Length: 603
Image (cartoon, one colour):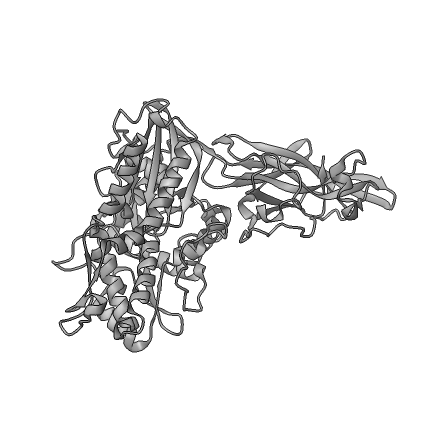
C-alpha cells in the first residue's frame, strides 16, 4: 500500500473530486494543510438521506426534476422521496435521468436506446444544474463536519475540482464538462478558472484507488500487468497498466483504454423492453405499473439475481394485482431464470470480449484483473466474469471495501500523487494541410481536380494529413510531438488557424483525409495571431504576400489534450496554448471534404 506524502504547498487548499455517474454520483474531498499528510474523505450525508432509518451513503441518484418552465425542483436523493414523486405527478414535473450519457462522443455506440430528455434544457444546462446541487451539498457537509473546511469555505479560499469521465471521452466532452462547471459557478470563465478544473478517466481513477486501498505486493510488481474493469451505471471502462516500479509505485498504460456503453442502465433498458413485450394488451402495461416494476427491478431484483436456474420476482402492487397468465400473483411478477439471464448476457459477452482484447496485447500470464464499480456488486455479473477468467487461466478479483466510491476517491489520489507516467494514444492525431503538387506522385495525380495555385504561384493539393501522434503510441507526460508547417496570407493581422484531427480508421499511416472521410473527426481548432513584424514578406506572381513558419505541438501524456502552435518572434519562440481552442462536437464525418483552412503548408 502506497502512502501519501505531506502537502508541500504554502497555504491551505480545499480539493473536491466529483464523480457524476449515469445513475449515481458522489463527492470526495481533502483539505490540503502545509506539512500535513492529506486525508481523503467522502461526503456521506446528502439531503433526502436523513433520519434514523437512512444509512449513510457515499452516492446519490443522478436524477433531477424540472417544472415546465425549466426550474429545478428536486435533485439527488430528494428526487426519489415519495413526497417528491407525488408532487411531480400532481404538478407535471419532468424527470431527467441518465443525462450523462447524452454527453458521449458520437463514436460511442449504444446497444439500447436512451430515454429522451423531455425538458427543453440542453445537456450542458442539466449537467451544470446537477453539478451546482452536488457542490452545494458537499460544501454543507464539509462545513458541518470539518472546522478547517468551514474556515476555508467562509474565507472563499481557492477550491480545486477534479472531474472524472469515462475512458472513451476526450477533448470535446471535457470542454462541455468545463463549460458546465463554469455555468454552475464552480470556477470563473478565464484562464485562472480553467486551471482549477482537472480531468481524469474513470479507469485511471480506479487504478489509483485500488493501489492505495490494499492492492497486494504480488500484483504491484515491476513488469506485472493489471486490468481495471470499472463496471458502472452507464459505461464499462477497461484499462490495462504495466507497473514500472513498486516503490514508489509507478505505472504506464500498456493498451489503449476501452469504453463500453454496457453499464447497469443498459440492463434496465432491456428489462423495460421485456416488460413491454410481456404486458402488451393487459392493464399492467400502464406506465405507472411498469415504472413501479422497473423501480423494484433496479433496487431489488437486479442486484440480488445470481442463479439463472431460479425464478426472480418483481414486487410492484397489492393483493388485487393478479394475472396468472402473465405470472403475476398478488402484486408480484415472476421472471424465469432464462429471462433474467437474457437481460445480462449481452453486457457480459461484451465485457468478456473487451477483456480478451485488452489481454491479447500483453502477457496475460503476468496479468491480474480487478473488477470495481457499482455494477461490480452484482453477484451474477461477478460470477460470470470469474468463470470466464478461470476458463482463460486468468486471475480476477473484486477488491474489498466500498468500490462504489473508487472513482471519486481515486480521482483525488490521482491529483495528489499521479502514479501513471505514460498513456497510450487511442487514435492517430494530426492536422490537415496542403502539399506541393508533384506530378511523379500517383496520389497527387488522382486529385488533379482539387489542385489550386497558392500565393507563391505553386500548385498545391488540399486534404493531406500530417500525422503527429500515431495510434497506439505510448506517450510520457512531458513528451512533445510536433510538426512544422507554414501559413501564407496577404493580411498581416491574420490569425494562424490549425484544425486538430483524430483518425479512427485501420490504416497505420493515413495520408489523405478524402480516402476515409468517415474515419476523421475534427476535435478542435487552435488559433494564434503573430506580431505584424514577425511575418516574412515574399513576392509571388500576383504581388506581395506574407509567410509564417510555425510548429504544431501536442502533449498527449496527460488525461487532457494539450496543443500549441509556436513561431519565432525576435529570435524567441512564441507558444500559443490551446487553452482557448474551439472544441467541436466531433462526428464521424466532421472533416470530410470541408473547406481547407487558409494557406497551410509543410514548412
